[in-house]
Image 1: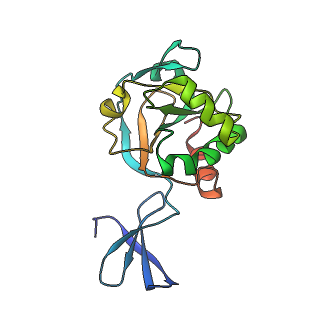
Image 2: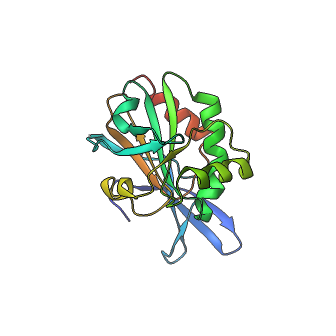
Length: 191
């Protein structure tokens, strides 16, 4: 088991007892009897002990205008690196849209950064198909952001403070408008 993590409860499922293992910000991993790891649906973000500097990742908005992470300084940002062809990404996008609708404004923004090679038209079609109305379109068709941010895959989500530093991250899909996620993100807004 990773140092600093602790078992927090037992649950019963079809395969028997499950121990959920948690760190400082939520549940990350479930262990079946015998120690085999399975995914847990309740993950939010794994927070870092201290903020980490980020490169000033560059991308374009839905109109092709250049953007960078530094353009969002002064706001807390949830940066989600995703793609329309990624099933887990497709699964979590409605919750990111609801999060933006709920908390979005001068203090917070969800930046859903697509790495689709087809650019903004592909994302626009996806948003229309999925009923995504609150998220702006941001695209990195060259996929440089994924490399610069050392993402292990898509989706990967980073919580970024008002100074442009990474506070924590999550690899894989999550329910971003869950009460746990809303509490955690709200607690970091304005810090």
